[in-house]
Length: 103
Image (cartoon, rainbow, N blue to C red):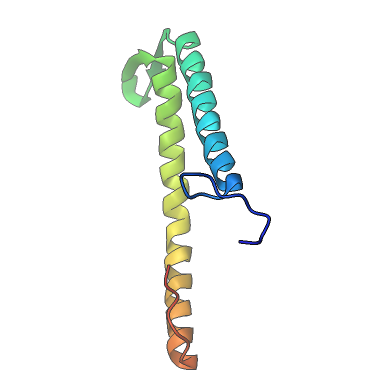
């Protein structure tokens, strides 16, 4: 901290406190937007599968379920590369005798 940083009574620098309030504001705003989206898309829709199977549910549930499945597939597709990179970093650290990063 430099000499010009104000410390609030809670012990946080003034800028960190403002960022904390801004993050809470953004979370609440996102929640309200998603809540409005949910209320506007509450009608029941039918999803048709192969071989005559079908499932009925609220539109918002189907949208969120599709998003969650896509997110899970995306994370799993990146996981192999991330684990391979971590393994290569660990081998490199041992080879060049570098300290482990804490954090």
